[in-house]
Length: 68
Image (tube, rainbow, N blue to C red):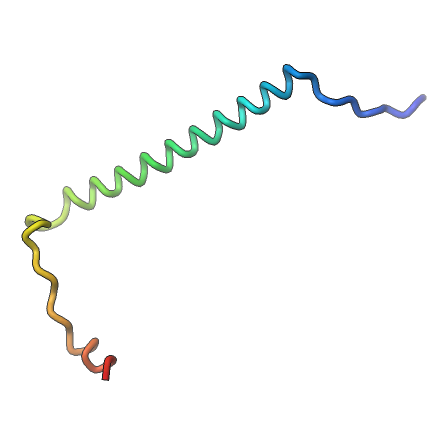
């Protein structure tokens, strides 16, 4: 039996593989972006008070001791 020779993939197969890769990349990108923006929305909607009027916290004693 003669050895099998690898044949290059057909043009249709290359097009399908590239389309499948792009579709997978796009789906993953949209999924990650969706989770990211949903997390930002949840963080903002569950934060106490108005975020624009909040003042920064004063430094704690522990941070004062570590700076010396």
